[in-house]
Amino acid sequence: MSCAGDDDGKNLQSNRRLDNSDLEELVSTAISYLAVHGSVMNETKEADSKMVHSPFALFPSVVPKDCFKQAYKLATLFNLVAFRISNSPDYLLKHLEPLTGIDDFSGRLVQLYKETVQKGEGNRQRCQFGILRSDYFIDVLQGKSVLKQIELNTIASSFAALGQRVAEWHQVSHSMFPQTSAGELAPIENIENFVRAMKEAHQVYNVPESRILFVVQPNERNKYDQEIIRWELWKQFGIKSLRRTLRQVDEQADRSSLPGKLVLQCSNEKIPISVVYFRAGYSPDDYPSEREWNARRIIEWSDSIKCPSLGLHLVGMKKIQQVLSESGQLEQFLQDRPEEAALVRSCFAEQYSLDLPVQHIAIQLAESNPTDYVLKPQREGGGNNLYGNRMLQFIRRASKEELSGYVLMKLLRPREYPNYLVQKGKAFFGNCISELGIFGAFLCCGNEEKWILNEPIGHLLRTKWTQQEDGGVAAGNAFLDSPLLV
Ligand code: ADP
Ligand code: MG
Ligand code: MG
Image 1 (cartoon, rainbow, N blue to C red):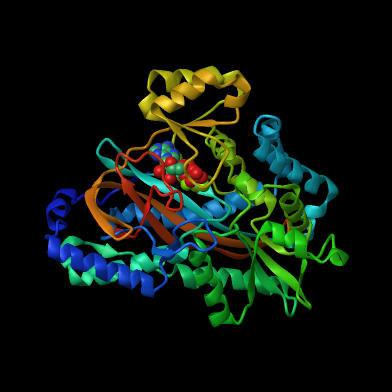
Image 2 (cartoon, rainbow, N blue to C red; image 1 turned 90 degrees about the vertical axis):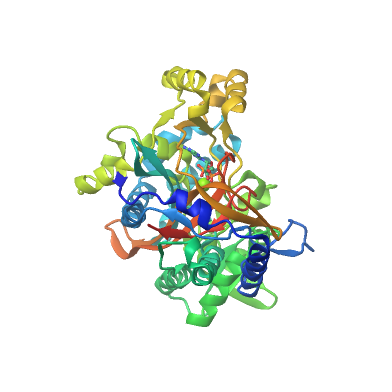
């Protein structure tokens, strides 16, 4: 899909360059704004890590307004498609079971899912609850801006809260230096919408004294992005929440209520869990022992409303996104909405399967034009993809079976815009590219699709230096930003 509204990059280049004293003052004002409003992270994963400001772009970055609107429109459709696939175990297993034996971590998730489906344990949860983030680059095709999806995240979609704080900072910088940001800032209400969606799910569970469980990594660097949401749940709705690692869930789950009810034993209190919100559990590092797997099973087999259920987690696998891009696949899930199916399909980038029968086609493409493709494993969190020479070396070294656990994607090349990116108090100027993420939330009960919620709930812009290949703020490659709509 192409979007109008192109660029004022050349003007920005000159308008954004500040002299040293202005720059110093603005950066220090920005950092104090972010610190005061909680856009902070832990510097390391050590328990006594110091707090630092989140990496950020000093000014908002250009996003064509039409593309932004289209991305918002797509959010409800991705919610719908993700819900329907999460309710289609045969489809998920058909495409993901082959990963078993190739990729230990993904295979283990798939086996747990299969066990859950076969035992009927997965049906205890009344509703599917998703907080997704669909990420896009605005690619340029024949001079036109075109919205193209990088990936759909169905678990632990992060930075809604810290991203909002940076967007709020941009409202300040916009008013202080209007010449640096000619355009309109996008309205921002991530935090408010996030907690409203969680409140709806909590209410559906409808058990007095229940709390929302945040499943987190031990010594999480990005803790404060979660804490802002927890405080807001309490402030706005009086909903209490808990932070626990998977290991703590295994230690504290009350065995007498299993399987079926998730109740945590905390000191002398037994606390029923209404909603399990996963901010961990998507990476092999989150499962150092059998105890973490046991916790995931306990959660999955309980009637608490999971965000996401294991089925919905699997919908976010890169493999499913590659399969959906094949002709007719996405359309199976939008048979009642052919026009919308076409809209969704238009944002798909080229992807290629590495399944054995067709693997040679993808390999030939990658080998003949290595700078035009990226090789993606079934992983989340940034820093896992292979590009250029490293991709080629891997293709030559890996077995055919190992390669079949990856997907190949055409590399997108968005327009570059100048900005200052700030990390650890220091600002550097240069050309940057941005990735737009749109959060969507849904809550849908029963197999007959009783929708309680299906809406876009906010946005995130992450910006990185043009020459930086991979993304991810937590991975240290990207900077929090917000859209300047032109
Ligand atoms: P993850 O789940 O690890 O975030 P992504 O698919 O989002 O995986 O890839 C990580 C990063 O790699 C993205 O944020 C983006 O910067 C870059 N990337 C991924 N796919 C492409 C692509 N097709 N073209 C250009 N860059 C890409
Ligand atoms: Mg991801
Ligand atoms: Mg990503």
